[in-house]
Image (cartoon, rainbow, N blue to C red; front, side, top):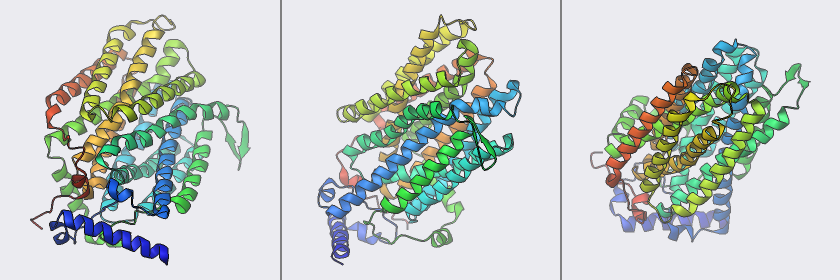
Length: 484
């Protein structure tokens, strides 16, 4: 009872504080306001129980981010061999592209829906549990893998679960101040890169697996599905025990049926269109698309290209992913400190300049290397290294800059829109790369041109980004809609 009274007292204190700062907030009480512990002053006044709940919730989110990296690192290197078990090698590259694309496509659509549900009051804990169930079902089907259609459908279903990423990113925004947001995003997104580092370790382990389970032969190609299903079951247990919805909210959380009854998908569509009218938001969406298009095109090409060019196999590619994971982890650690002294837009522009240099090196050198020759292997590794150096800088700064352009109650749907664009890029990127595996120079030239375009767009819009990082009240209170 004492704990409940403390929570109610903190809730009332927070509402009184906000109403003192903005008298108009009370007039807008019919709108849902996800006012979380984003003020540093308020965070310092949390009870020990609230602090523990906040920390464990963030740790669960970090673990989810870690698993998304492990998933990518153990499925991507083995997908080429898995697909070729069912398909002729001539069509393998295209089918691998489809495999990655359907995962991203379902995730992009689900991300909009999950973000919308989060914004209108559906419990985030319930959304995480729902998304995790989809991921588990998808991975079980991937393990079963009776034919290529089951394999593709399995990734489609697992992708639905990735729709929980936007509301989780929105929650990070609400649980941070403008000053601490970029470091917090760097930590959580950095966990995914740690997963990319540990993923190859699992690949080495599952390569030794040769046994039957429930009559199904376990191999290095279908074992990733079984492993990930087990790990995501752990997420369900952790979510049930250690994940807490934020106790600070003006309106009570809604049930799923109530939320859908009072909000039509047509309203969601119009709402999404109204959010992306700003030129700054449009540029951030375009640059996000280009960055992830480049990334997924490279990832799709990596295994077949290195297999043909340098005679690499799954273990070689996994080692490359491990080294990449180390590099990205170091970049994320550095970003935690750099972001405190350098503006996010400056970091973003610098990252695209690095990415442009990487693509330029690839366009000039790599297409002319002879098949089977390792003469240009150092150049190839330099290209990959620079590409990977830029990626975490872009991933974090686009997300944080995008969050600053959105009001607090728009964070879920806002992050959903950004993830939708990102996922569309990860749909188009693999298809583009898979179709041009035999035309390496054309593929690299297109990548260089669009990255250069993104760099110029950012330079043109540089002064238009918001820089009021110290304006905590802006992060807490959104403008009142006078038209309502």
